[in-house]
Amino acid sequence: MESENNKLNKFNEMVSSRSFFFPSAEIYPTNFAGFYEYGPIGNKIKINIIDFWRNQFVKKNNFFEISGSIILPEAVFKASGHLENFNEAIGFCTKCKTVYRLDKLLTSKLNKEVPENLELEDYIKLIKENNIVCDNCKGNLGNFSKFNLMSSINVGVGNENKGYLRGETCQSIFLDFLRVYKTSRENLPIGISQHGKVYRNEIAPRNGLLRGREFEQLESELFFDKDKLNDVDLQPFLNKKIRFKLIKDNTEKDYTIKEIIDQKITLGNLITYYLYLNQEFLENIGFNHENFRFREVPDDDRAFYSLQGFDLEIKLNDQWIELFCTNYRGDHDLLGHSNGSKKDLSVSIDGKKILPHVLEVSSIGLDRLFYLLLYNSFETKIVDKEERNILHLKPKISPYFVGVLPLVKKDGLLEKAQDVFKSIQENTFGVFDIFFDEKASIGRRYARLDEIGTNFCITIDYQTMEDDTVTIRDRETFAQKRISIKQLPEILLKLYEEKVSFEGI
Image 1 (tube, rainbow, N blue to C red):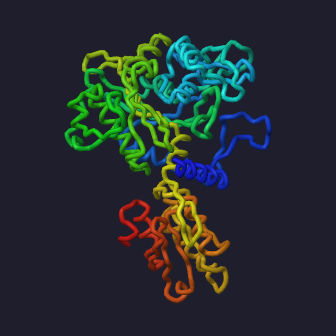
Image 2 (cartoon, rainbow, N blue to C red; image 1 turned 45 degrees about the horizontal axis):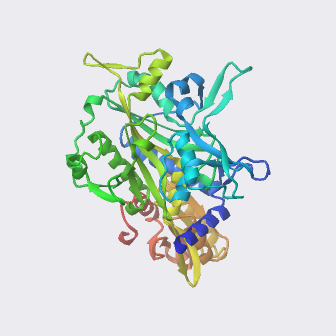
Image 3 (cartoon, one colour; image 1 turned 90 degrees about the vertical axis):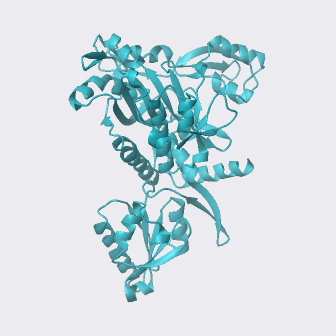
């Protein structure tokens, strides 16, 4: 545990010193908690994550992608249930006025998961029974209430046009479903995705990117005929395994898809299929299989719209952090908006009128994904009697796939390195980003690029001037190989697409 805490401290120090992300308006003492900026390196990684999700998940599964408004009318969130149900139970210290979110406070004090949707009276009873007091001044807790997380805004002049900043990206997907369905000329099931910012008036933002007031989501919702919940062929996947933490199990455990079907772990094959695709996406982006799990959400802890839910959780030290939830939402969303708007959102298929059910395939918190992926990829290692930080990022996630480094700046090596840099740029068609670094010793430059996750380094040395070859250095093993400059673009493209390993070039 001490080792893991040490790793987390070093990781947080590294992302701060490299300005991967930092508080918004940090030069002002009145800045708000829960808002963050991404620096140049962090922003490159974030954009690469979005592109990876778009290519490996959205496009691969033939989902339609939209871009909806951040501000929506009050009526939308009345119909969705957010104004009534999107609440957290809170309490204040009667002495120092510190505010607490009750489910999180009780979970930490009782060392067990306390559901987030208990009745207020149940939280108060647990606090009194366990003599829980303020962490800061040991004062008693009081002034208990339910606090709505939606952020309101007035649109235009006056107060008659009340709107809200969206608390999740899915509402536009539900509102736009019928239009997308009609214009796409596709049949059910139809998947619709969206990426964008959302806002939640969090009670006590903490842990950096893990709980903010402004963050981004990578959302995918599937619309389908409820009578066809099992209409997906899982035969090719029967031996594949999904990692669960079921209510009946004491710990996480792998289940084959055959076992999932036989034991009726999910309500239908469609849910199982998309759980597997979510897992495949996470493994492809760089998470270790042992470091995540689908936790079955008990009835008393599920969202108000959920018929069945599995929280995808990532391990961080001794904690499991929720990254997203796969929810079977039933007809809650389209029925609610149909009633609220007085617009029939059903579709006709073969003469049959259907109000589609919705599977929330995944609603990934991008900022959490960014943080947890980097931590999952982070390692400290002793190299030449010196401790170094290394980010083991996949080629398509790294801020720079390759660095070009002249051994020294004299004797024509700098100019030769610049020529190599331009050659790679021109012959790899901008597929990946390249970093040019001429400052400090070659060892120090290697270390800097290892720390931000650069996969390979190209070094131009004196032998380059003789035979037009360069060394290519692998971040994972520190091994180096000598290759021709003419072969460099082709080899780099193959390495980037992971069609060949470093050992295989």
